[in-house]
Structure formats: structure tokens, C-alpha cells
Length: 249
Image (cartoon, rainbow, N blue to C red; front, side):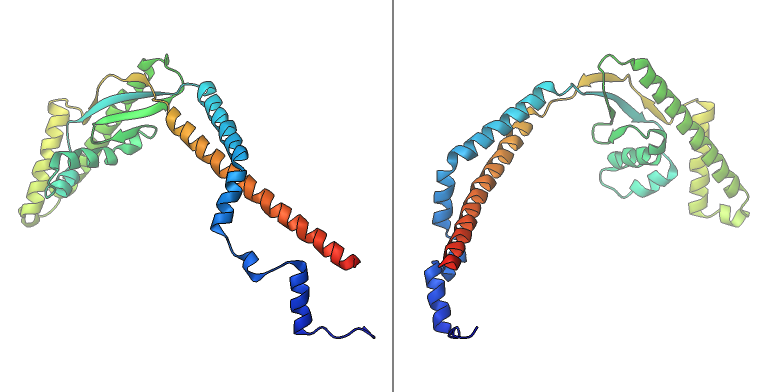
């Protein structure tokens, strides 16, 4: 504007000093930060107490959850599993793992623990009829047996249709022998592929301690955030007031 001297770098510096701003104001002073948190310790403590109470109320009001579990035993292994696991050190564990992975489609709602040879699934009520789970497992066992029978018969039919030269090779001859052995166990001896024990229901362990600890940590973080936000808001408000006073002058 006319009659107003141009703003020089020295004037800018003088103006900055009058506002009380310094470059180091934007840097994080760790000691000042700790001091601010100490001043706001009551807010942090209150936040922790509130969140612990919320966690406790959740633990107390949360309905009990239960797990139905049942042991299993693989009686007959497919030839694919035998070939896959023959070089494994943990041969039996590998077979059990492969067998249940091949039959997992017949047990879609069950979780498999191959180390403990257990099946499990969450349920909402402890008193639910165990007979329904037993029938479900029996149906799955029958379906698995039917599936393996059909698969083995088709495989044996294909191998029997090969010319004698191919049938005489070591790999094909071994596969034919394995298929006939499986058919003998399933048809002649009436063996099942997978057998299950009796299902039982138990209460799932509550994770109360973990919930309380997480609630306390959340309270600490929210308390710290509140304290720091208040500090930033106050500084921002003071800067606006300082700018307003400067403009009035």
C-alpha cells in the first residue's frame, strides 16, 4: 500500500520475534513432553480406570462359550498320502495330516488338530444334544468311506485296462496292489477310513486377563492422546489470540 514501507527480511525477523515464535518451537522437546504427561497424569489414570471397568464389565456380562471336541483315528490311508509322506521323518504325523486334509470337505464346520488327533468346533450351549454331533460324525465317516471306495474302484479299473507291459512296471504294479488292498479292507473286512470317538462339550477358557491388559493399554494410549491434544489445542488457541492482538495493534 502507498505510504507503507516495504517489508524487509529484518522486518520479518522482528515480526517473528514479536510473535514469540522460534524455529525450535516446532521441535519435539522430550523433557517438556514428559513434563506435560506428568501434569496430565490424573487424566491418564482416569482413562485407564474407565477402560479397565469397561473390560471388566465385558468379561462379567460376556456369555459363556463352549467347545465340542472328539478324537479321531485314521484307519486307511490313500496311496497319494503314502507316497507323499514316505520320505518324511514324522511319517505318522504326516499321514494323519494329509488324510484329514483330503477329507476336510466332509467336515466343513470342524477344526482339525493333527498333533492331538482331535476335531473341535465352538458351540453356544453346554447342554446341546451330543447325539446330533455323533450322527454328523457317523455320516461324515460313511461319506468318506463311500468316496474312497468309488475313487479306488475307478483307479483300479483304469490300471486294469492298461496293457500288460505297463501293468508290469514297478510303479503301476505297486499302485494296483495298494488299490486292491484298500478294497479288501473296505469291502471284505468292513473297515472304516476314519473312526471317531465320543464327542464331549467343555467350557472354553475365558481370556479375562488378556482383555483386562488390553483395556489398560488402550486406556493409557487414549489418556496420553487426550493430554497431548489438550496441549496442542491450548497452544493453537494462544497463537490465534496473539495474531488477533497483533492485527488490532
